[in-house]
Image 1 (tube, rainbow, N blue to C red):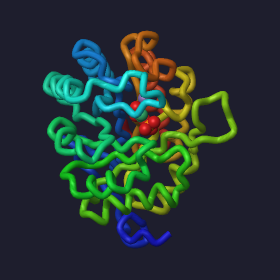
Image 2 (cartoon, rainbow, N blue to C red):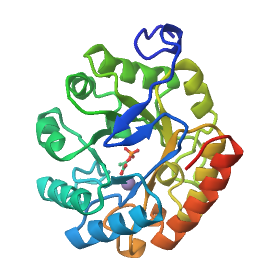
Image 3 (spheres, helix red, strand yellow):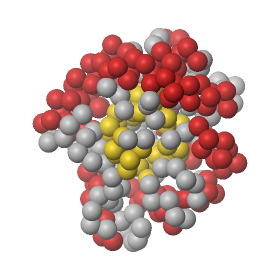
Image 4 (cartoon, rainbow, N blue to C red):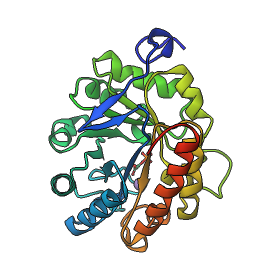
Length: 271
Ligand code: PEP
Ligand code: MN
């Protein structure tokens, strides 16, 4: 691997990001939680307050949604971003949200603390280059058919333009297995940390697609050395406009935090 900017070969120390006072890549494991999609101000405020109380460090929520079908809910756009920003005012939680189109970068940057690149856009090089010139940290999801080489190549595209504040996210890859939505590539976490100094987090929600597997996948990711998690939480998952089957309830999130804390301590980290 010859990616000069993101490769560990060319930099010995690990990157620690400071996102509104939340450190990513340090001793502490970070938990980003929130709904798949922002659906209403009540929904997002409710989840934000609950997850904050239980120990989440940042709030996630999509306003621009990359959906398989063009007839599915596409997200609330700027209205959704405003709702996220209200939730940040009320809770202090920094906001992580997806940007799908290079043309929307200025708009999303107005409201977000971290710009998420979705799995489906990991190799959208126009978007990556433009994000390299943005003034915000980037959460780069692994494409579900992307090799580690391709994933790190995508990070390099962002870095080349000047933005070195990149968090990698393992969110499951596509395999022959159909019981789970994707397959969490647990070993990619330590492997990518060997190859790159960038922080690596895991997404147990998209990786499994099943609520009952979110906690085990979270435990495994932290045990494997992940610097954090991004988890979908919904006040009423059965009513969610997207990804209800993999969204956990607030009570389950409370359980997740307890479980993850134990694993984090077992591997010499804190939550
Ligand atoms: C999401 O975070 O809601 C999402 C769409 O994730 P991914 O791009 O990993 O599928
Ligand atoms: Mn989702």
